[in-house]
Length: 592
Image 1 (cartoon, one colour):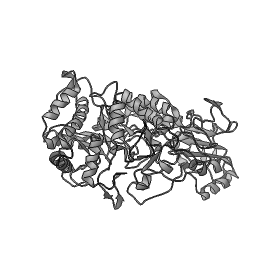
Image 2 (cartoon, helix red, strand yellow):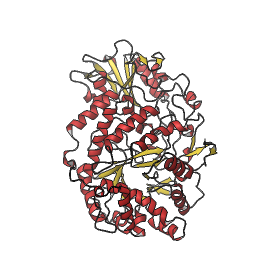
Image 3 (cartoon, rainbow, N blue to C red):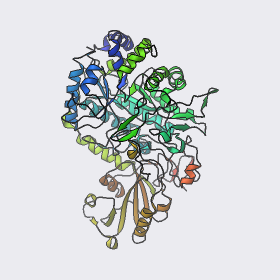
Image 4 (tube, rainbow, N blue to C red):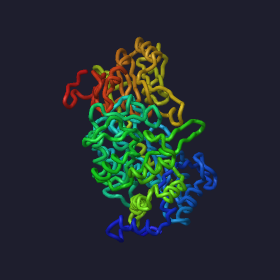
């Protein structure tokens, strides 16, 4: 049973005592963090899509951390997690489970990155919070996330993501705050204040800041979930700039940090060439830099799937063991612990770690060291909660939270092009709509065919290249940022008949150059319902967003830019920080 850490002056001392009381097998189980998918009728004895049953993982392997993938409603989730906790606290170490989650309050859905809101309030993607640059709002949002997670039984967030969006092609920008390291650090501080509080405790959700040391500078903008995206490059020499948010996280007492998949290529630091292996396998970056130089004392949780090559739902999914592909799974595991990783994301083979221990390829001291950091976080989360209460899951989502999220969606919208008095749309109109639900039009407005319309409104998503060779690849927005020619020409024909308003969901930058030629108004949203978009277009809510990254003029300009340098394309169509609502930008004029 876990005792309150408030009874002793040093949480880490109590963690040492707990670890010392565990068997080697129980300690080994703490060093794994597999994925768990549950339904309302979850059977703990049934095999999962990823292999063993949840009971086997909890009881036989001693695992006490699970990342939740698909889940049912909040009420059903809370009931299932409570049943799994009963199994955990009555077997083996008796330690409770720490359930974790990727973001769950936004619009995008990708099993490997984020989940569309279901039973919780819906907010713009984090990149939209970057467009607003409102730390108070971010802290409020983080408190809502904290309370929703705690109500369901989730105590660890596998976010926030603080990679700088410095290459326009990269697939993961929607979950970041933008390309500016100072803005990212400012919003990160606010998010941690809301999620963890002034210190990690019984009312906190433990944050995992990712992806160390910054995942934005991908060669050709490709994503390192896949073999073609394994290289991360720094032609502009900006490695230290990408580190800034992690320095902020450490100073704020973040519970965990997750290294990225990529491998640094051509990186020299302190006069030494950094080995070209994936960040989690890289002792120079995990132990020497993160631990010793930056002083991080929390948990290093690896990104998921670094050891075991797999086929998932019929698709290949090679382990992201970049630079050490030649090692077998045992060699990869040993290399991760030697580099300084404490916990293995997406893995569950505890027997392999025990074999490494028997063969003296991983030491007992190393296991104890990692387990102590992990138990330290568990003790803090499960400390004295006599003065706190868990939010009522039956009341989710709270009406005021839904309203706040909707308002934030509208506020974050960035007006990119708006001549004269084109906005707001102040009187009832006959509207030709494309990609917009006609039922969302304001009272008194009318959906009309093109010939009878006063104005046209078209909603578009940022372009990407569909790919589906590997598991998760179909859900990643990668490749070209150019709209298909047929889409451009269809909208050009619309604009030839009526004024055209185009809204583009900027989950990543988009090449708007051809649309800029004929659209009367262009706005960018970062995850917004049709109602939220129309609230902004009609002036019901003032759109306040500024571009959190630049919108390049062409793919050729992107190809000629340096992936680690923010705002590095020549003559961008719209620079970072731009909004047509404001007469000037800091440090430059508003003209393009």
